[in-house]
Image 1 (cartoon, each protein chain N blue to C red):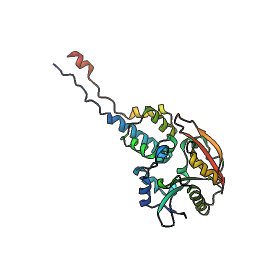
Image 2: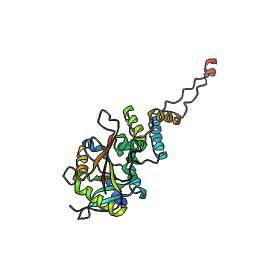
Image 3: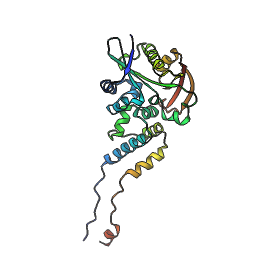
Length: 99
Length: 162
């Protein structure tokens, strides 16, 4: 009998650091400094830097603010974050059904 | 207090990155991550010293004094001007020193960059700063952004002759 492989639980840190890395990449591509984005988002440079490092969890409202500081749509930002997340490991469905 | 401007040093940049402003002004708090930007020559950061040589604040001229929303709207292209960004050491704010501090920065910029005009972008919640800018002769030429429930993300574009 085959054992169904259960993928290890994802670290919540993965999503957080992906959000942070995506925000930083987006900022760097636009040639914006932390100050410019923070000022535009109405958050502090220190808070934005912590989010970029994956140390702070931004609320949806803060994410919206940062999107406006970067001058991108929040939907664009979310699509990019989703794309940057590694695809979840595929569970071999047919195998498990056969077993 | 007499203010003197000089190009920023790594030591000053590290100090500024640790400054913490209380209450609503905490959105101006620094972070060690931003030290590199403070030292980037194209952003023209300058330290301000008092007559004892103590660091009392900073100015930046140009790029880093603008916000992305304003750039998209093209508010910085309407008329040529030098953009001014500034910050005082937290323990010196709210003491009526702002106007002299700002005028020292403008004098320096006039001699260094020979600008046609000065311009600055300030969040509307920051009444304290706006009063100083008005006293120094700045006038609002544009309001942009969409205010949030907390009163953020709305700015005044202010301008005065050089």
